[in-house]
Image (cartoon, rainbow, N blue to C red):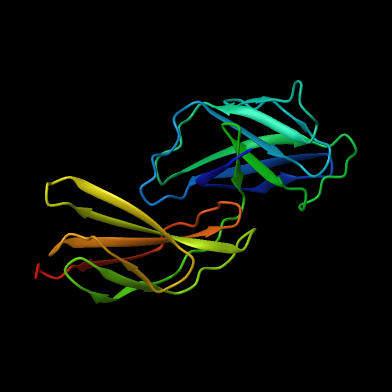
Length: 216
């Protein structure tokens, strides 16, 4: 299954006994200008041991025809852009061996694998040098989540001379990065995200606004 970019999921127990537990799962759109997901959302996860899901009021959790470690269901709500969707799934253990460590190991949304713990993006990006058509960027390194950081996704947002809004994405393995072909005398906001080896993408916590030099 392909990795779904810019989404992550995490879970914790709000109630737990060896025989029964309630998993609270948080599905988040991590992209800075995310479009979110339209309802209904097909959601699933794998458990490290045998469990039996219950049918939740408001959530169609379906375990028919799938392995006992794989729980799937349909969420009637939409995931708002750059927002969160929180829901509960009740599970029971036929062997009475549930512990706090028995959490989902892999998550899926609309049949694509998503990342449980994405990397942490750089906490700062700055622009040490500009010209009328170029800009050079520096940033602090990101931090690995489930997988090592592979590269950085730099997004430039600005209004072009023709009035159209531009979102330009560039990948770089390390700083510094010099970007060319920028419009002169233009206010630009740059965002940076860390990308790990499996395609997990961090939130865009760091950004900087600058202006290119007037045309020469």
